[in-house]
Image 1 (tube, one colour):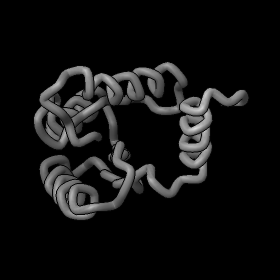
Image 2: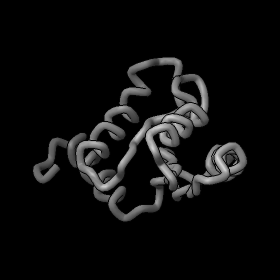
Image 3: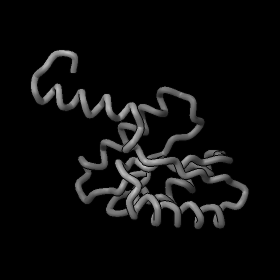
Length: 119
């Protein structure tokens, strides 16, 4: 789940991530969805997962920090979806921000900008 943008190109990043996760395997269903300004909405994405047979859904915020959208908006969606689909378990994952792997990405991007090898 990402915030969403009125610019389609900005939303393409999440669609890329979803497609790559689908290709890697390990998850039966992977759907991109957006909080606002883009389709599908979080509710539509969840409904699609349920239609495809998901009994447990990991709601993964494609956000860097645990701000208002993650702690309030996405938590509210988690509760609403649990009521709408009572036989499905909804788990809200942590945002990306403090994951150690993200530090490697940040360092690589800085090295790329400097034109340094190893990026």
